[in-house]
Image (cartoon, rainbow, N blue to C red; front, side, top):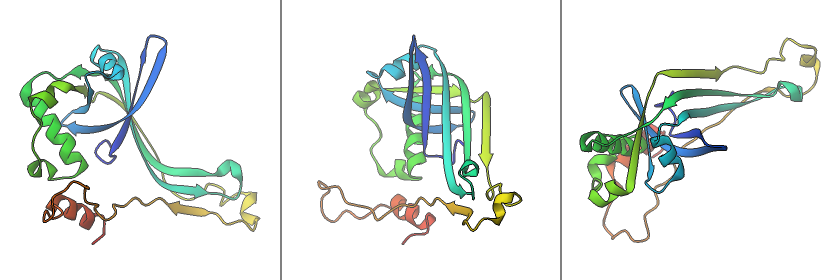
Amino acid sequence: MLDGGLFCHVACADGDHPYCVPMLHARLDDHVYVHGSTASRLVRTLAGGANACLTVTRLNALVLARSAFEHSANYESVMVHGRFRLVEGAEERLAAFEAFTNRLIPGRWDEVRPPDRKELKASQILAMPIGEAAVKARTGPPSDDDSEDAERATWAGVVPVVTSFGEAQRSPGLRSGIPVPASVRRLRKVDGCA
């Protein structure tokens, strides 16, 4: 589930102030990594050892029932609890950056310039061991098929949520003659496009 979602939310408390921030993440073996600016309050709080929760959720479908009460959603989610540690070793930091890059688009790391010293200095990378986790999911049709409401002349069923990648759009400053890279072409083919 961690590998299936592109986006996570990381939550912790800093004194009396709760925070929940959307972030990109990547998993390497039994650790999940996030990164952010050295100026980020959340990143500093997490690096200081605060208890944290990282959640990834994928919405797969809306579940429409005959009664308002029975409406639901088909989804998958995972919540990992623990404490992040600051990643300080150069080798692990680069491996994490590679994982972030290839997590967004597989193969992209080989097409781009790796981060330089200044960029590495401006970024904090945090790792949380995957120890305590909770997984939740819902699948299937509405639960009122065998109820009195099934007699109603109201449509009920599942409406899938489909996410796809659109046509790649050139950066305004991109020099002419540079083609769409293989990683993006593969991404669209995996998604069923092009």
